[in-house]
Length: 322
Image (cartoon, rainbow, N blue to C red):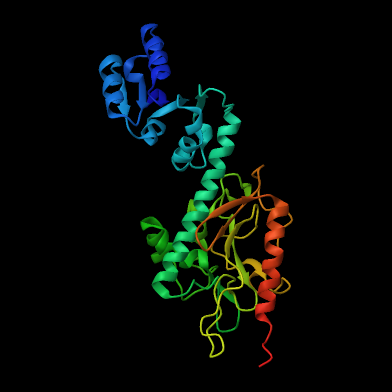
């Protein structure tokens, strides 16, 4: 592994790398730099004999210390591009910035990257849900019930094949002919895909899910699932466009068919009420909609967004006069 990686291979990065090599702080083989310009990479490799790459993720992968030597106006895009590579473990790296006028303390970078990881998790989940919808014509049941009305399976299990190859292999080991906490399925809870874990959620250190569906408590479906068409309403619309919300320390095992209730008082099988606090991100909590867009909202904004959604689902559940 390299000792120091430069994201941005401009004049400042060149001067620093040259000084570190000349003064024998580092050997050329200890350094790697990324730059979007092929000519610049060729120049740095020829002059300094350091490793070069066009991919910022290669710098992250091969370096313990990361030095940001990019223009101030590009720093947000750079941080976003590397968030997924760092995942929930940004503390494994030392961050340094020489971007002029941009305060970028380690705490700031970690906070940003952790938020981005959480947001990307929700986006991946939304894409998987949409892919399931494209394949089956509907979203998966948020809560799949058995013949007695007892919650049996979670949507988090049902979309495993849409999340990726490893998740699909996990799904193949899950038995749909027994409940989520049956003798075969219960041990699989210990293999929770990390896409279901917010990196700042202490409740997700093991098998606790950080992301819960917004469920129409009357039928166990996603609240964003349109009702069945009727002669009067051949093309019905869903009462809400919100799919999944971040909930810190939910106390819900990821395979457990239990989520957030909308449309009637909590207490229906498989549903729970809205929490008082949604996230440990200082800036707020994430909510993803049917377009796959993850938004960051304050605690008050989340409640403000969900209260009308709760009312809309309740109204949709009311029997028609006809």
